[in-house]
Amino acid sequence: MKGRTIVLDHLNGLEAAALIVDGKLDDLLVDSDGPRPGTIYRAIADRPVKGQGGMFLRTPDGSAFLRQIKGLAPGQPILVQVTGHAEPGKAIPVTQKLLFKSRYVIVTPDAPGTNISRSIRNESERDRLLEIAHEAADGATHGLILRSSCADAEADDIADDIDAMLTLADKVLGDDATQMEVLAEGDGPHILAWRDWVDPADVVTDAGSFEIHEVLDAIERLSQPQVILDGGASMFVEPTRALVAVDVNTGPDVSLAAGIKANMACARALPRALRLRGLGGQITLDLAPMPKKDRRPFETALRQAFRTDNVETTLIGWTPLGHYELQRKRSRLPISEVLK
Image (cartoon, rainbow, N blue to C red):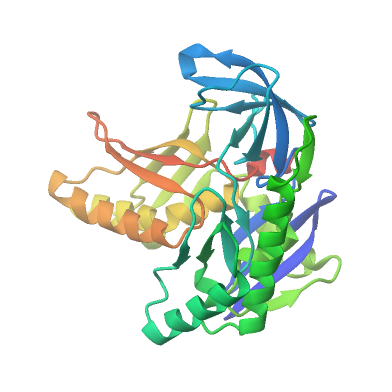
């Protein structure tokens, strides 16, 4: 089955969205009982953690932790935004850098100016978008980022999006109350699908569509660590408390090139495997044996694979033992939590 299909349904009573590309589950968003990433609080400073240069905050949803904070005294109100899902037993991760994000635009209060996605290279299209932005945001003091989805989009749709996000930003930043409060809810999976899955696709919203489109079967397979790779190789993706371990095996191939072939297949498949399982944090790859001269092509393939992934991932590099390390934002709920 060729093409793209977006399926909006519920999983274990929680709102969920699935992206199917050419008949294969490519992305999965599932809501949680905790605060959604993107939620904005007026929080109250609680107690500093001097060794980490941060501070615990009180919010309506429990304790939050803000890193690298200076000049904040206990009891002082502060605006913060949830950056990801809290690990079990840990505080909600938050930041002071507020972003107001929608399908076409991101409003950046701390970074004035208008910027256009670098993926839009056509000069006439960039000029058109700048004209739309300047007209829609006339007099606004906040910064704007026009997303790649603006390319060839209707001017009215872009202008309406800019107006909605600027209005929300003004409302949140202009609130001068002092008690802790939720000022803006983060987007749920159905809105996130509309916001981020912008390529043309069929959209299915009927109840029970996850079963009809075999999404439930694909999700069930995600509970298994093994991922079959091209050429008969495989990798095992296993989260531990400290990190995510990825072990690459060559399978039945015993040729001299088996190691590099398996590792290149891992590079291509890894973003999807992590994305679908909702895994982040420290990730360590125990790769199949390959000569050191093949490390650079592997890194290039890995960098290319993560370029189109929408979860922030940093490629760290090689360890003395020959493992490869990555750092990935915990912006999603692990599938193991969903399937409990």
